[in-house]
Length: 196
Image (cartoon, rainbow, N blue to C red; front, side):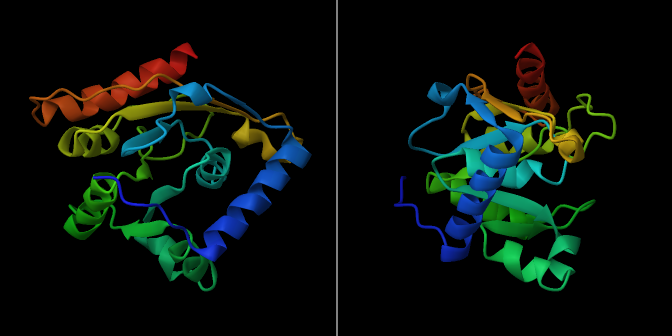
């Protein structure tokens, strides 16, 4: 079911500010936009090197992007208030957070785009980390594609290296799946990223 997408004023302002920043200071280059679905739900699955990866991914997209963020971030004064109003919602790490899962599946059912990192956490050395089950689990249960996204140089923001974002071809979940398929699907997204 596709429901008309609306974003908060704060999200729209923030996205425009990040676009200006990434264009002006980092000469960003975006490739593979033809692989992005124009409608319908999908899990956006980038590699993860920096705290700037979520706003970069959201700023590079034409459609609004929704984010799962660790609950601790929402407890930070001012910052927590801001991210809550810019399409982010909290998830408790280390436990099965059913409330967060229901929110994620509801968004995808409404045809939204949801960011979930296949590695689950930031890479310390800039190399691809191990696949975690989260992105694959969400895509399998919602029966939506994973869109691999390769991000380059966000781990070198202070050096003002050129930032690149490349969207890969969709990776589709199996119709019949088990929990064993979750990590496998996340790994397929990372394999596609490594080929870009």
